[in-house]
Length: 409
View 1 (tube, rainbow, N blue to C red):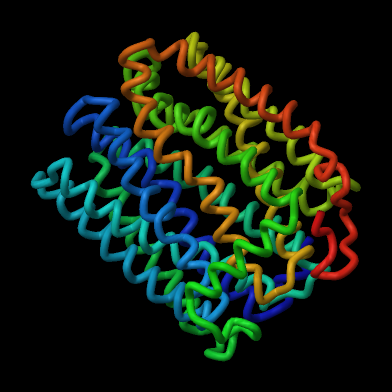
View 2 (view 1 turned 90 degrees about the vertical axis):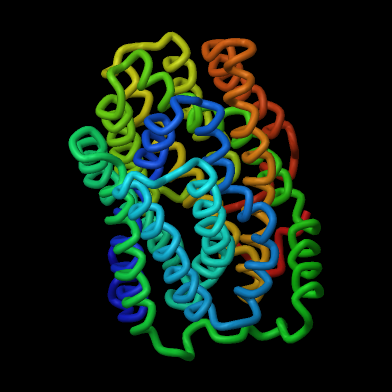
């Protein structure tokens, strides 16, 4: 499981991303309660969360094309600095009491732009740093570090928000982007430089990426599954979960406890994913997705905090297992020069409906009630998984790839 850390360059990347993951786990909770303290409106919270995701939807294909054409190291370094500026400014505004809703929206938009370029390049970079046989171990290690950092960070976030306010938590997140940038700066400039086969224009590169995904039914069906899941299952949790905690469960400490359980589930799943290689990875990932359903169902009641923490463990395990299996499948079954572009298409499909879901979750809860919206999310998780499992291509993807150009149907 730890063999990828023997590679010096991967080790540097891994340490930087672990630091950044700690900060990233602070911000969602801090931003959520910053907005609730500022306006008290779940609709405003949905708008701010939406502003983080919208640039990813609009720019992720461009980010994927750039990640397969230019130095992935440089792209990630620059975007880390951009996100440092966005989150650092957000922290200063909150700490000085001068923050307004529109300011938070603009700064989250800027941070989202950075993520749109960073994330596809990061997936491609891993394929450059480790061999294909070590990809699942590397992805599992990254998931373990994120989950461990989340456990530590969410406890700190709940305490910081409750004791001194959300601005301090966001300031720590901003500083971790500098740490990540420092480790990326130490990678050789030749790492993940311009990819072979990506010498055309960016628009042509985007078209090639779309074509690669379109040829593989298993991949675009997978993308549709998680897109619907993000819109109708996960988005209501992200928007309405903090609201339920604030209204019925005692506020930030309760939501922090659920988040820690979520991270703990992810940590356990990271260890499992390093050793578990299902014969039919897509089928396994879809069945794992059902672990998300109890969390919205119990939030709808709302159940007690301890019951929600158990559901949080299951949901965290679902996220890590699903993502590790999907990421590894893309890295193994596609040519390396298409990994960033295919990842960007996958991200776009996964996120294209999420902003709509986040934007509508608040108004839907105001019109129908929080409970019906969350119950509908739990039912949707089961329904879309059952429908996707009926697609024959889902069952044809095997753990052992033949060649990077295989498995197209």
